[in-house]
Image (cartoon, rainbow, N blue to C red; front, side, top):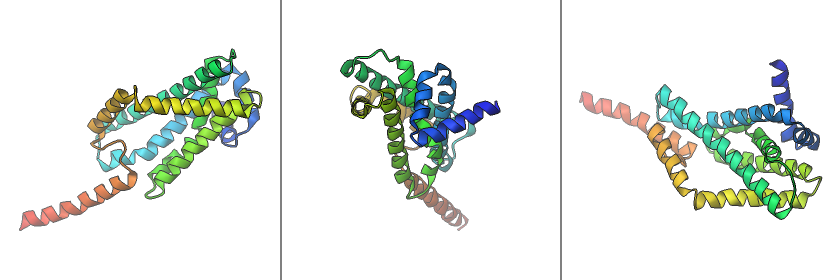
Amino acid sequence: MLDFIRLMWIGTIEAMRLNPQAFAYVEAENRTGTVVLAIAIVGGASLLLGQSVILFVNRVRPARFVLSLLLNGIIFTLSLLVWAFAIWLTGRILFPNAIPFATVARLVALGAAPYVFGFLVLLPYAGNFIGKVLAVWSFLVVLAALTTLANGNFGAALICTTIGWVIITVMSATIGRPVIALRNWLWKRLTGSDMEASVQDLLTQFATSEQAEPQRDKGGRR
């Protein structure tokens, strides 16, 4: 168990450092799948921890809290898989190869490594900026990983990574809209807030409600 945690820690650090040796090892070793999956889960969990301020502000009950984290966890995992599939498909079409999808998926999963700092998105004012920095960092990890997979062909890796990202963005805005709408509806049912609400908006909402309650109490006593 300790050895597994050590491998996770090393994999996370080396991925964030964009170390090509780490990417080459993950590419060559199928058994790294479990470690990489764990890294993705930890990254996603940290991001969810930062976003859980939404659940706290809305005083969500424990059962709904767990369901909300599960829902967001599924969304995070599926987004990585869809991105990996889009990258893999783009590579197969533009740069014919026999690279297995599982290999691409393992490398894309490493893109979740920067999200170990995901909890920082809960910071007021700076949270949105930190979230964007982590997203760019994640993109760079995937780009570096695919460059290693493409034997140093940065151009091919950049094309596949970018087109893959564009594909999932377009899908979200077109055929994926019903899925996004369902996700947002479920999220609002569980938390009482829009999924797009910023941390600062939620904290302001919370502070306003806290100030309003004493005023209502005073009004009631009168």
